[in-house]
Length: 233
Image (cartoon, rainbow, N blue to C red; front, side, top):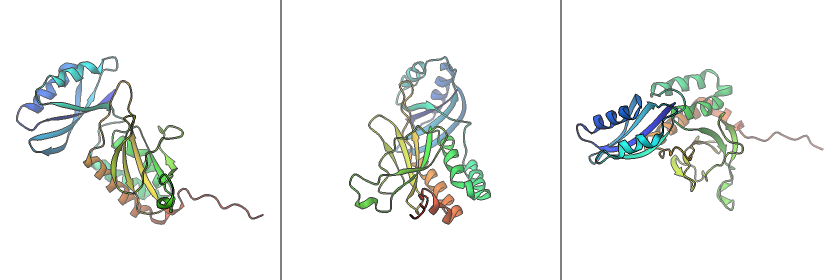
């Protein structure tokens, strides 16, 4: 299976090589490395690796923890192949080519791009600010791995950000800027694997995809979650 391993490490020569060697000795086959951040002498890197399904992740974690200055921020299952920013443009082209299904295309594709389990386009009532207890978001469209019913975080006020629930589940949130729509992406916590929070670069990537899709889809977004008009008595 594919795993995503997020590591914070000293940004100095040789440390990245130590991490790569440790991953290989533990049984992981590295297929992609993405640098998320370099700041203050530290770096945050995402490794996508092929991991033997029968192997225990504890061996991998122990090996990385033995490297001085290295911290493992998360290990979780990655859905689909490693991704690049070029896939963002391809996704937006698909949304533009078939705008009638554009929102569904976006929601279904985003979990794979961000190594997440599921995503939903949530609809927040226009009067959310005056409601007791928050916005009361409902689901306009859900990706195929979404639990029923999905456990949504409090998405209001509507701004792009990451959130972590008490049970360890991580969310990235990005509003469309119209019709009370917000895209919610989730990484679920499990007994075997502990995902990392959504990094600020991932939240920015999600927000850019959502903003571009909002421009492409325009007024079609106003129809999402609109209740059917009932017949008059």
